[in-house]
Length: 601
Image (cartoon, rainbow, N blue to C red; front, side, top):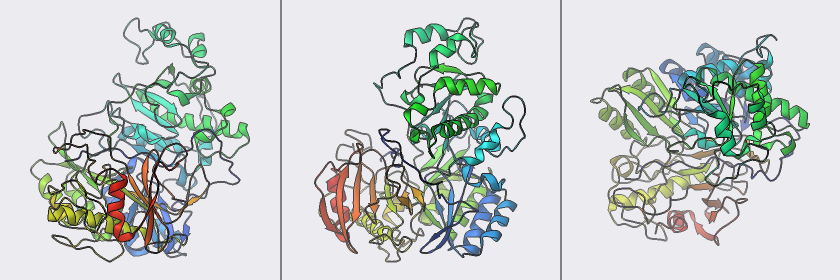
């Protein structure tokens, strides 16, 4: 079977140009509803994706009683409710406050925190970052008056854009790869590395100008007594000349960062955001993200270290952030933990759940004993706390409800924008066409033909498909594709309206990418799922040329060119330029054309 592999983060600027922002962002929230063609939309921030079972139940009731009965999970592990009546804002806010989901009206849209969803559950990573999530969220909502050690400065954080993102990685490398504005990476010594900017640079990235050569940095950071949790010598001082010379002018974009103590990490992340806001004011721009700052106003290690020192937080510059071991998101299935309990990892087809599916998830969250539900940036859910004997039965229930519980599902890695009827600009119901594409693959698997059903190209032998993908196919449009078993409606596709592409300035009326694995094995994979060739590309189905929310890196672009037609192209990371000649196909031929574009025929 294919193991779950990470999808690239959503579109990011190349760094060559600074976007010009003529206004504040229009990102929706729980208090700022976004009008869409299918009613108003609320985006409810859930830091770290962490919900108690009671909070999850409250969200389900909000969706059923005020919205369209479905919930969307976004690429930041937040929740969206669609189909809201225009006058329901006050009641929605009251319900969310009562459930503890709206702790501060002023900070509604700035509580964007992703965290390693399996942290503390599977024995991996260097820290349980759940406590960091709680502390950072409290810092973001801090309205304390001015005082010593930076008190009062955090109140400025209510001015962050609704796009600004924090990532708290427990050291495994999953959310560190998502291109957050501020990233904390737990280290084996109990500390953390603080970064500002995009994802970690790959091998061979040159050292930023103005920083100390590695051998000099190593001498300055050499430990002399083994007692310094920041990895310095006993004579080191973060306010001294050594630290200053290491990072006075160095931008953090080249892979460096600041090492801080674990107990200081959440506050350090919050002050990094304060430093960003200071740079925004100095630049005279309206930058929403760290990477949008002009080069001459970039966040530097020296400037950030000085701010942290003023807040009483010791920080030591590091030349290169250590590369985490893996960037893979949780694969669907049962995840054993060191305490004898199992967590269940579930992916949601196109990121949306019906009311019945959400009730099942919340019921199982209570039954598992942890009374907790974790939403992931890959539009999935993790349910902790199951006894080993109970996990298989729970997974069977979830699979029977149409959710993805095995890593070989053709839903994994498939993305789409909102499309019709939610977006007026879309030329097609892309969610229905994406479901048809997956159904064609599923029928081919169930038949054991080794061919994409209704497609234009052959595919590898897929007869070993899991029961939950061979037995049920979801069609969000209602034109259900029937396969070898039951018919399931996963309630459509997730949408993240009004998210503006940082390069083009286009409003994103909604985008979805489900799970962490590509939908079909590449021709170089082995029968056991091991990689013998390059990773398959993600697939994204778009309703118009804005391609709102498409993945970064290389991807297969399926663009609607009419009610029933698509143009399929492989696009690359450099400016999203086409790498292949496009081919125009009907919706019925989409599965075959996409398979050919991915080299899986």
